[in-house]
Amino acid sequence: AGAPLKMTFMVVDRLRQAGTRDQSQVSFHSALDNIFSVPRINQEVLERWKKLDVPVHFLSKLVAVDIGARRATFASPEGERTQHDYDFIHVVPPMRAPDSVKNSPLSWKQGPFAAGGWLEVDKETLRHRRFPNVFGIGDINGTGKGKTAATVKKSTPLVVQNLIDVIAGREPSQRFDGYTSCPLLVREGAALLIEFDYENRLIPSLPAIDPLQDSYFAWVMKIRLLKPAYMAVAKGRV
Image (cartoon, rainbow, N blue to C red; front, side):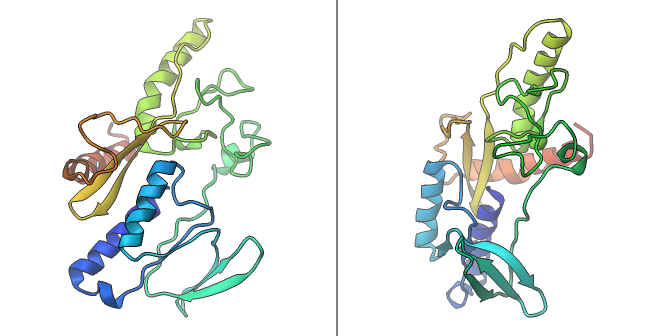
């Protein structure tokens, strides 16, 4: 996921700006054996964090937070527990579908998406695999990629056309490639414009922008354009 990576980069940058980076320790814990699902981006971020002196703890799952003592407890796959004191902690909670889907016949009943209760759709047509009159858009879908606003924007017209096809008695004609976009903030004034598909291929919309190079344009787009657009969508204005 991109959110905790952005937070880590920005915390380091704010500490640097405040002149307190040398007196601070910043570390990252991942319950997985990686920090990002796309291998090239995963490696790029790890290399950057090594230069920024941000140690990464893999297979380290947060299991408890003592707010009063400011102490976090992490568990390894073997059950070993370690505690870390903190002044500031950023936690991304486990994600799952709402109960209306999770506890309904529409959710995956087996496989990697069953535990989260995600909608059982074909990853290309986004049509339900068992209920042909049901389609999914956005975060609710149980697919390998695609829980971003950019995914919603890219997949919506495809789903609309596929729905029209089904209503007309045809098979869905459109195929979704899993397009996902993650403008990854790396410091104030710079971001990586990361776009990828189901196959973890980088698929930049703007070939002139290297997704592995700091971009002021990507920063401006994220802060000045995407944020207002996202809020407008959330409020039903777009």
